[in-house]
Length: 396
Image (cartoon, rainbow, N blue to C red; front, side, top):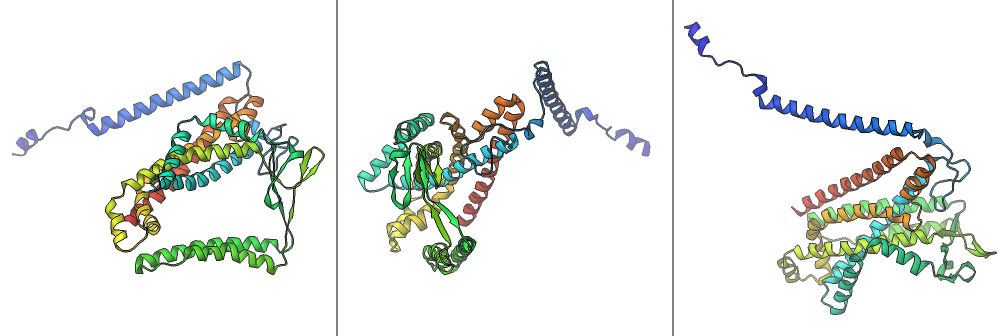
């Protein structure tokens, strides 16, 4: 009997017919092909660079740059600064214009998007004209318009336009008073930071209380007291330790104050208005996606138009708004690379432009620049996805 059972037992199948094993083999073969192609491309590039006597590697990072940058958030000079420091100057300038542009375009886009749905005919049509004009013109042309047609024709420094609070405007930019912190001035900064943190904590607590009990708390009033009134009280209590150095004419130029260059203003205005046109349409689509029954139910409860929009419609519309809003944030950051057209020293203009031309190491410089933009986009998407998930949980 044992001999018969052994004879009818099915034999073990070959590994070649195992789908799981064959899947591993195919994936390994694909990885090998991709790895070979990358190795071949890298070897070919290194060989060509060597044949043309072009240096490779990242040794240039610590070499002296030998050029200056007009707008810099960290110390940088033509004498003593390196190409690595030039990279950080360009990166910080890119992050500065992108972060401010995202905030401003969000506010402007939400305002225009809501205005397009206004029952006021004039407001609605003006918002429609803004969207149709702005989003149908190339961004590069808009940057040229703001820089060459609006900011360049401004008068020279000797005929500067005087603005309130000591501001001066001319074709070299906007000059604002430079604050100087005396003894005790750091206490005002601490008061402002404490006010911001306390406002965030209070807002979080108020939202939880509203969700649990339905009672609303004056978040805006508390935020005003903590962020504005508290630093002012510390300012007067410490003997007003902040003074201002106002810009004044000295020869053919202005001396003192903080200079905001026209290239930065043109790029910021262009990116903000252009992106706001797209955000406005995203906001309008999100609001229209909310059922009219929600608005009618809020009206039946006695809510006016403003609270209905703020407390009922917008929170539900955010589920539709956030994903395309993230794409617009990414586009704004990437579009900032057009700054090279008007001379703003962003990452592309400083690093991929000047540094690449001086070192000739195109592979390394372009690879670093691409890695930076990829990292910024992935980080932005990561935080926006967290926010999107949070809004979805709140909605449920």
